[in-house]
Image (cartoon, rainbow, N blue to C red; front, side, top):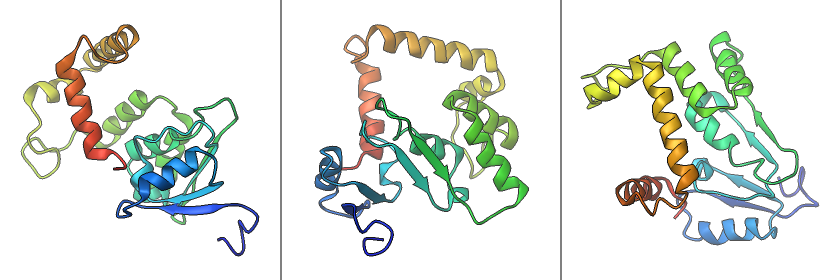
Length: 182
């Protein structure tokens, strides 16, 4: 890529097993890197307002939630942004899924549509093992999911740092630790 396609641009690579991945990300955020080739390590925890194009090769290999997370990495600044979902698989199933991502900017609606298409999984099987009865009931009641979403948005609107919600803040930190670049 350096020699052919991006010969006039500064290009670097980041992946989950790199020791210096944080340094590479800092250089990208500082605009010392023009093109960053990355693995799924950039799915969450990356805030680079100047990132304007995300190209996902083999998009059919990722879940809808992952694709939504990826596209959320671009368009955080004032510049127009693009997320390109590339696939060699032209089956109706794959194209339908990618079209769903393309036309549904709202992650909650995307997850709901995905659940409606795939179902909620098996309660005691390998998929979604251990899901509580309360969680299963919430999945069956879109109104309850919508109410929970509105409550979560209200909490974040009034307490963005979650200082008044320490248990929730700890849960968020634990979740981010599982998915961060570090």
